[in-house]
Image (cartoon, rainbow, N blue to C red; front, side, top):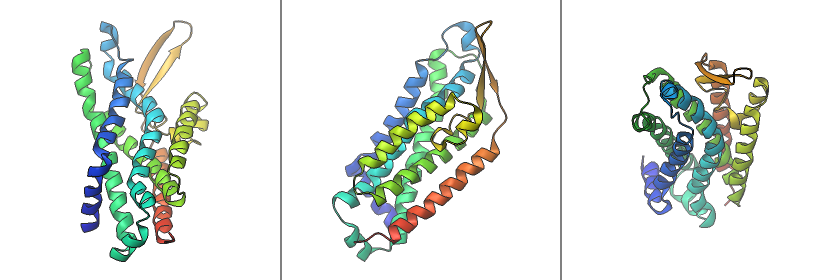
Length: 248
């Protein structure tokens, strides 16, 4: 607990809270730009929003998680304080505190995104009822994929002295994930950066003849969520080992 509280105190200088809120605002405002405007479209407003948010997440979250992960480890890299820290606390407690803080910030980002949906629906005049079950699925999937990408970026931040590397991988991953979204489904399964989209609770059918798009609720993809969690666990173990092997 002391190690976690110490990490929380460090956030005051890093301004992690504004960064986390900013990530959510980018996603929500970007999704709201394509929000339904006509009466017929507002009748399916939340369904359209549930379809749009995972796409926006695939673009923004890889970079956002990389930014959070690099900031959490940045003080140890710039200040070269690892040697001092390892004399005051165990390497395991340092990793646990930073992992807990990262997941707390991840939960904040995901929670704010879900809470913003009814607010946006109110101001946009959506007449569709908001399905709480789909919101919980979106929250769970976004949290898990964010966690996986966070620990990937955290691993890069530990292994590489230059924190720009994690951000560069986040940018490339965002482009790759968005590209995979327009490829066959099996391709999207091979790109973890874009798992937000195949895990989306809502899909869309486009009829080229009538030029009508129809949104629909699709089956929850538990196997892919399980793969996401498995990848996150593997990356967690790799991050812990990287800190234990860190030379000072």
